[in-house]
Image 1 (tube, rainbow, N blue to C red):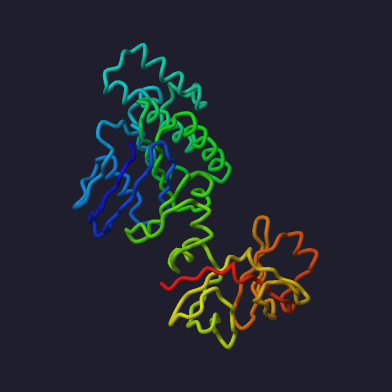
Image 2: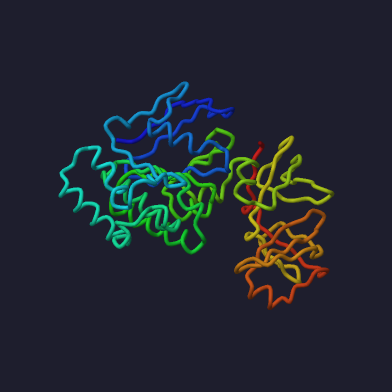
Length: 337
């Protein structure tokens, strides 16, 4: 049965969730992504029944077993690893031999079998996370709730943890609801995502679609679009600083356009192609990223372009160089709010 969040609103400590409407399919890996303070944890706590909404209802949760993995893991400091994992089973009065077998099996799968007698205070962040996951898994939950579980980990540990979550989801076929502020993480994990900003779900869909088709300037800004410009549109042209950008809609009193930095081509000579937007400008800044370079050009407006390290070296780009930027009309996203 699908989990349905219907018109949930909640005021809590000066913050407000507003009319949250979501349907999460049974067995789906659903990620709620948004900045810190957007209300992500609040939604999880309402789903888990730890908080009651002021209005609205959560359907499809009755008689479901829920495993909740908090950001800070919430392990019991007075219990060792074994007893932390076994906690939910003891509450349910499971046979002691069954508890021992289940805990040891989970510990082996999560590679913490050598830690079972350790005090949880002496564990690393990654080890604590695995203990928290094992504790949640012990009750064989129908729904897993993950509250920013990788935020305290280093990059390598985050990558390994994401792989673990994908394998865990395939194995359990449980419903996963995972919240994060990291869109890269959402892209790597989710079947679908919902973007939560200021207590509202403002776009929902498959990760690639949301990334490539933001529905508002607010979403484009959150997703890291560097090239977002606003103005009036007449005859398929948006005029900014006397620069006419060809756009895919005929007119609008005011609209925003956005284009991804990797959808723009830079070249020393003008490219003759079907692309209808081509502008000449000066390189003002160069920023080195992990495997890319970000080039900032002034063509009347400042445009950000991402290129590979190989292209950057071949073109021998320097601040002050004059280059062409070229992009297709079809690469532009247009929204009127």
